[in-house]
View 1 (spheres, rainbow, N blue to C red):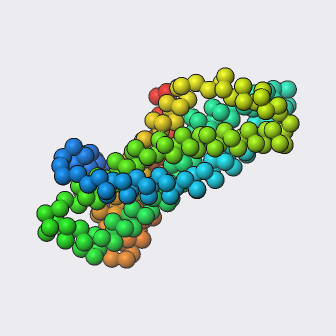
View 2 (view 1 turned 180 degrees about the vertical axis):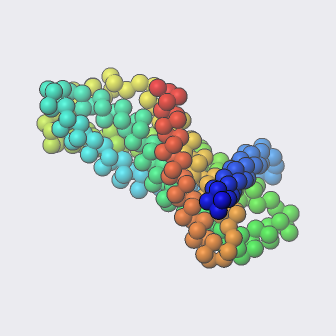
View 3 (view 1 turned 90 degrees about the horizontal axis):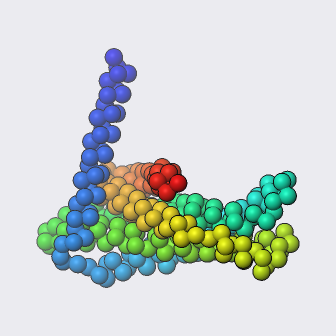
Amino acid sequence: MEMVRKIGTMGINFVKSLFQFLLFLIQTVHNWFLPPYYPKVFLKNFIEIGFYSLPVVSLTALFAGMVLALQSYSGFSSFSAEGAVATVVEIAITRELGPVFAGLMVAGRIGATMAASIGTMKVTEQLDALKTLSMSPFKYIVSPRVLAGVLVMPLLVIVADIIGVFGGFLVSINELGFNPYVYIKDTYNSMKMVDLTIGIAKGATFGAIITSMGCYYGYYTEGGADGVGKATTNAVVYSSILILIFNYVLTAVFF
């Protein structure tokens, strides 16, 4: 009976947390359309999420494309199908690796930062101070961050796609002996609008997941410094898990 009680308690807590998060998300989106607006706060978060994440996203995408080209060539050479390397690199980067790697890198960087900063504001009662000044924490703290994440992540995914495909091009030309003109032609011919659409849709979804989870765990932080550390860990872990889950869901939808 003790085991049943624990399982039941875990189930109830999960449902409560799920509804709490859904209400948090609804309130966040609702505040997008209500004045007052804080364009400077939005722009600051847009730059923080997008521009300052470019180095880690670009480096990850570059080496992902390089490794993918080597592995694809190793496999296709057994079937004398080396010419398919360009097509595989383009499809894999734009549909899967570009969005997923960009999402995971941004989750580790931005999700943790948001959870820590908002959690610190919560435990030091700065969020309560905003309320006393008649400023909604959702309007000033949460909504601009989530909106910035939704809008900037597709741009990061496009950058990751370009650099990832370029990484595959570098390896194919310099190490595998491909003709540059033929490789570029094969990449261009294999590229379809649906590939970019899938990547952009995944980028917007991952941006919403990363920022909403970071803000959610930061906003409901409890327990001082230990609570801030726990919120930061939860934000990164659950963001990464949801990115992988929704990556499959979106892939199945566009399949």
